[in-house]
Length: 388
Ligand code: FAD
Ligand code: UDP
Image (cartoon, rainbow, N blue to C red; front, side, top):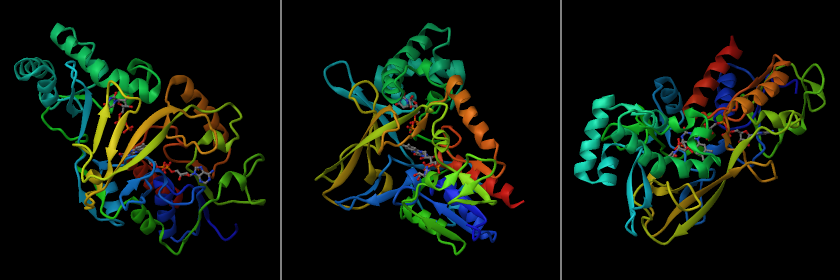
């Protein structure tokens, strides 16, 4: 270990960007990844039918931060792609209907018909102004009876069942930042994200990561669980039986790092059901959310996202959410922020803070609902700090 200046645990965005920045500045970096591949949850690969799939669920890049976009653009070109999502639900007449999510002025006219939809749209615009994003929890507080009835409709038909499936709780029972990610949008913009930069890595995420990690200063070891090698039981960091005095950047779940000694931090996990079908196109949009019925939350068809031209075959994925239990083979995907869980997180973070050279970085290690761009920004900032 004396060969290395820094040890990075995890080869997702947090680990790979930090590793690259340190290596570029002349540091010798060892990256340990317990999976058999790089790219963390952004990993993509061709399936048996040749369809490029995202193994851990659909990942669409979007950011308002030009620094993050420019940085990643050094490692990939982009496919211009604006993600669009519809809700698919019973129409109350024995059939089904679809409308845009986030729920917007177009959705209103589909759900209520053109006249009533336009009238409600005018009421919303008068109350909030054009192009405003209003959270469902905020909308439900509005005193106007029309608006509050509309809020009740959106709550019932977009949020309550989906949130129950995803989090095992109603919208009031989850962190308000979670449902605020998908507001009601007083607009006819049907894109899921409004960020200035959005798209898909032209050759996929895994290729992007191959380039990120391709540096003579980086040594990568796959299939290596760092917890078997890291010893944090004493006053200083030991690695593979030797003291290690360099920086250690840990991007896994922090409770696991300390053998879950205060109990497990709650996470949600997902079961992914991939299906390949002998058709060109399976569904109308990249992602269709099942906001009222069906046991899964959403179906994503990858060819919409990647633009892959592959006639006669397509692959979709259905997502089923449940509590993470820590059983072998399960992956923690979503932190479950709440005052109680955040307190537990801080107890673990306090253990980590005893080691000034141990840095917790990433969606799991920081126990936060971060998108990819936020993680890249945080990795760039941490690397700057470590290089000072
Ligand atoms: P990860 O990608 O989880 O990487 C952590 C890595 O550390 C993993 O590879 C893990 O195997 C490894 N590791 C953990 N413990 C150890 C250990 N002890 N030893 C060695 N290795 C270890 N973001 C977006 O911006 N857009 C999206 O559309 C989007 N969609 C998403 C869909 C789903 C279903 C999920 C779950 C997330 C989505 N995200 C999306 C979020 C995105 O996945 C994360 O922001 C990003 O992957 C976080 O990167 P990370 O490096 O922190 O974590
Ligand atoms: N949400 C919902 N209905 C939808 C879409 C989202 O209730 O049709 C809520 C749900 O609680 C979800 C949260 O908004 O977990 C955030 O949605 P997002 O699409 O950002 O989730 P992610 O893609 O991160 O799973």
